[in-house]
Image 1: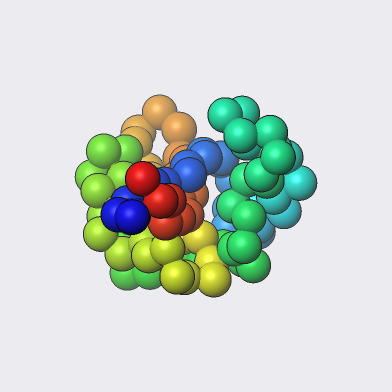
Image 2: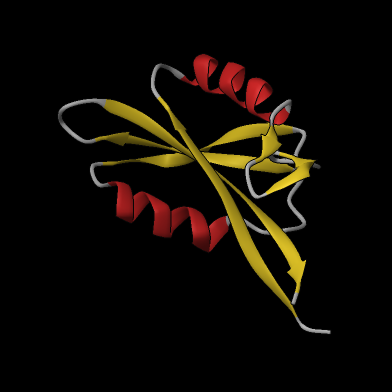
Length: 98
């Protein structure tokens, strides 16, 4: 069977301490499309994507996709300063059998 990578994403505001708190909350919630599985299941923590603050959510999304791997024990968070509101995009990669 072939496998493909899928991504779980969420957003929150605040500083990185708040991102960690949100991540802990998200981990206790079931996936909307798969009620028997938790959000970010198997990911132990969230780490910031270092070295860059993004000014565009799409650019941050593509950057996270390039570096997130299904075998990573963590999710990654990209900081976005988009003018109106500062946000963090959090992403975790998973391998799913097709």
